[in-house]
Amino acid sequence: MAATLLSVKMRRPLVWTDVETELVKLINDDEPADRLQAIAFLAHFPELIARLEQTVLMALQQTIVRDPLLADAPQAFAAVEIDEFQNELVKRFETLDDTAAARVLSATAPSSLWPNALSRYAASGSYRGAEALFDQFISPFRPIMDETQLDELFAAVRGNGQIWHAARTPSQLADLLRAIHPRRPSNAAINQLYDRLLDHSISSYGDTWNILEQRGWERPVDLLA
Image (cartoon, rainbow, N blue to C red; front, side, top):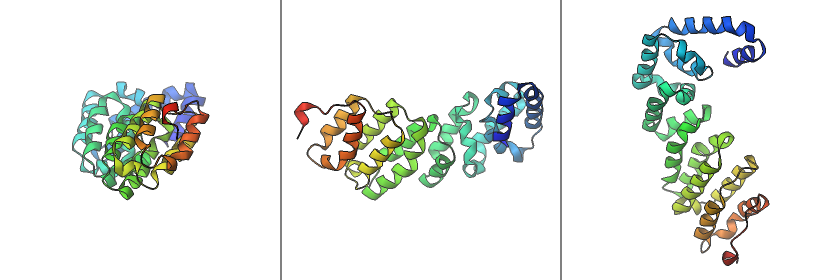
C-alpha cells in the first residue's frame, strides 16, 4: 500500500493533497492495535507527523517505548529516521537479542541503527560467529554505506582477531566493495588494516587490495612484500 501511495504522491500531486488529508484522519482515528502499523506507515510519509493530533503522537511514542510486540513488527523500525521516534526506536533496537535485531535489519536498515549493528559485529567472539554477524549486521547496510561507515567497518575488522582471521572475512569484504562500487574507505583506514595484517594473513585479502587499488588506493611502499 505504501508503494502505491508513494506513486500517487509522485505522479498525481493534485490528487495527493486529498489523499494525504484522509491518511492523517485514518491515523488520528486508529485503534491501539493498529499503532505499530501506523508507525511503519509513517516511515514512508514522515511529513504527516506534523499533522497528527498531539495525543495520537504521544500514543505512538508510548507504543514504541512499551509495546512488547514491537520486535515482531520490524518495518516499524524504519521510522527511526523520524525525529519524534528516533531515540526510543534506537533504544528498543539496542535491547533486542541478535536474532530479533537481525530480523529487523533484514526488513529495514536505516543509518540510525548502524552504530549498534557495527558494535555487535565488532564484538564477534569466534570465527564462524564473525562471518554470520557480517551477513546479519553489516551486509544489510550496503545501499547506504558511506566512507565514514566503511572506515568504521575496517577499524572493527582490524581490532578483532576473530574477525580478520575468519576464513570468510576476506571474501565478505571483497563482495561488499564490489556491491557498493565506487565507494571505498579512506586511505588511512585501508592502510591501518593493511598494516595490521602484514604479519598474519595479508595475502588472503588479495581481492580486497586489488579492488581498492582500482579505486585509487596505493599500497604503502614501505609495506610492500
